[in-house]
Length: 341
Image (cartoon, rainbow, N blue to C red; front, side, top):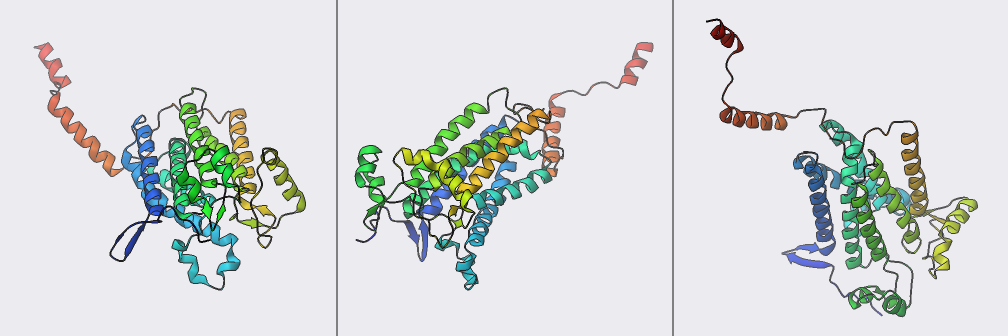
């Protein structure tokens, strides 16, 4: 049976140019995430241009990082066809690589702007989750990043999914776990938690960003094992046993792991990386608290250590308006002479 595509991956065409739903959805995800970040930035009087410039630089950096990450772990498929490395439209990106690329860009960018990276990363954290919960629907349209085979009754009767999702999960006559939906919903719950957490007085600088990584990595660890397109590598048997043991609660609930090609290894890279990220994030929070380095609260003011030309121009305009509205004060020396007379 042919692949059942309820949705056409091409939204519309302009001449020979085909505009894909995947690109439109990713664009919408980035825009909505940006608007959420800008709104929070206003509370700290951070110009919206700072975040807009960050997105303009961060998105390409994320795409490059995502591609490098993917190609690095599948180099055997590309070493004899080097130009295929640049054919990103054929698929092959990894979200952890995207995060690495975006973070490297953000560290450099915010430092040049004079802002503390951890303070700005905290503001951006909810926007990252928004981007992920919306962006995963691009995978839905393309019928990719799905999980292992399931019965149609599981999708309809147990998950109570609508027809358009169930039908789209029919790939070549076989129904699959909607892994994109699991991750999207996990991101939605995480977004609510971050929005509540960032208004708590106990929250310190950098901790919201770390909370994002902890939440996302927990979900990714369990969801990743359902997928059939995971990147893998050959690890010692005790590592594979540890990962499978941690995933065992899912087995108890009736879930089965998706197929992992033995040619790529016995451990899914994203699962192992998720464990590492959770450990690092927890240690980061605990160490900074214990050593007293977490002295800055999330609610504290954010001030740039640098004044850009745009800031100077804006300040000048404001000063000019104030001079027009406020009469100049008399010269102090003249006031003293007036008193003497």
